[in-house]
Length: 111
Image (cartoon, rainbow, N blue to C red; front, side, top):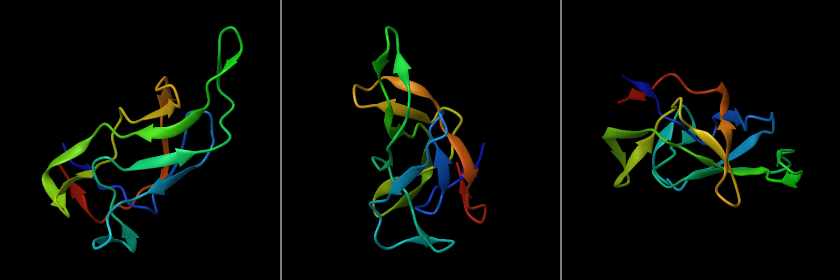
């Protein structure tokens, strides 16, 4: 299957509706005017209200992108693709649920 390559302009939220800010490490490749996201890059999340029993705060703080391209490498690293298994993750690495994508470029897709 093919999926869009994520860029710094991708708009997404943690599963609890808090916007995430993409943090690309790429410096040379623009896709639709946004720097490409590469393996190891994160999106940061601030203000997530998630708590786990018995009321312990466990807010989503970063993203975990699960789908990397096996064919497209940018600056020596696999490109990050939009995937159904992408998660919001707490500081203690506890998954909060799937990320919600609102705007993803559609000009460049990869597998």
